[in-house]
Amino acid sequence: MILWAIVTLILFSALLLFLAALGPLRDTPSARPLSWTAAVQAVLGFVLVGARLSGAV
View 1 (cartoon, one colour):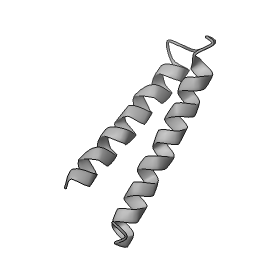
View 2 (cartoon, one colour; view 1 turned 60 degrees about the horizontal axis):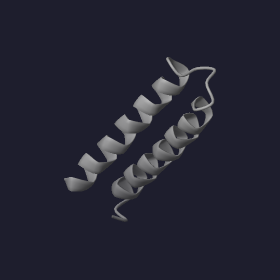
View 3 (spheres, helix red, strand yellow; view 1 turned 60 degrees about the vertical axis):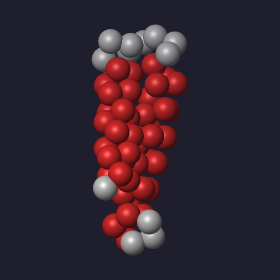
View 4 (cartoon, rainbow, N blue to C red; view 1 turned 30 degrees about the vertical axis):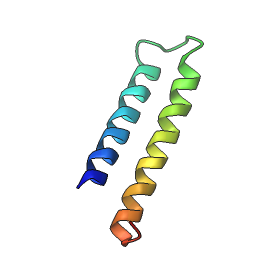
């Protein structure tokens, strides 16, 4: 149960960072690091979901 809460927070944070990079921070120097951070968080979240669904965790 705790793992699903952590995964939800990671994916929600990734979504917010991605929307910030594409929205109000577009064409600013901080947009690229935010989009990379969002991508890394999304990958981490999906890896955790995959591990949980496959029974590895």
